[in-house]
Length: 226
Image (cartoon, rainbow, N blue to C red):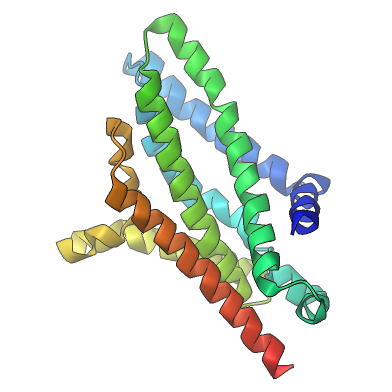
């Protein structure tokens, strides 16, 4: 599986995808940072991630839409399906590689925390809890993005499905409170308070595992058909 992780991770930087993802996120994050610090005079690092969570909705598909859809379009999926490596390892390898890109992006945001230290005293514990919640949200999004990529060979369609699902989860709670626990971005909104909610953490992890399992099942089904 390590070989798959290395291959997928390198592919993000051998193509513009990794640079575009990190660049777009930091550009948008910088705008929100400027607005919060210089316009609203806020030194709360964690609040910027409310907007950062919105950014993920539209840029996570950049990482995920090609993961499996491209394999099918180019015909390399057949090599994956017939290789001795288990499909579970293949899916996990792609998932971990995409997650590493997000972790690198999160590490880059610490430069904003350092800047805030010149203007005030941001709370480090709250900031770390927020970063944890942000990572949990990101891996949930990545897992669904990979699932969407596994059901089509068209990268654009995979991206549209992913974004559409994320946006749908935003608005579901407005129709009924029953859907509040299904809105990933609403669940994340609790983390910037500085408290780790076990139930919310389990929800993120369960959602992630569920999407990855479905991806493996879809690929396994295609393998058995072939």
